[in-house]
Image (cartoon, rainbow, N blue to C red):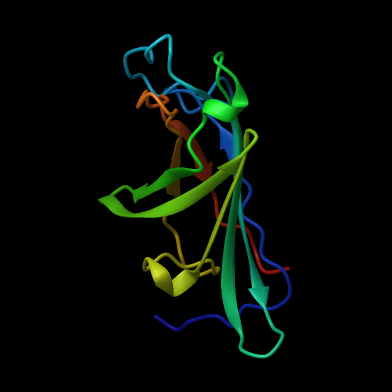
Length: 149
């Protein structure tokens, strides 16, 4: 397959979906989380062409999380589990402070591409943990490829 040159800005914006595929609450059909577990309230993923110096595609992720025991109880390291129709692809680190979580990586770090040739829809499951070891239910964000911008 001929690789298309990525020009300008490519964005992949995720929105939480429920198990029916409609925009909604972010439920994944899993059992409800432990009532003492933190909650990932929202999340998004995007990518863009970084052109200063070395040229590469940069992925960025952001999420907000809460814990009824207080934001200070959310561990500083969470994770983003990335998958597609073929299964698990890899895991990225999610860094959290005061309920704001971020992560970033280059397109080649996990064999996920952000270009018009890619036809796969990637799933990003955001998970945080509190200091007592309670793990949030995953909030799954579906990122869809956009056209060249």
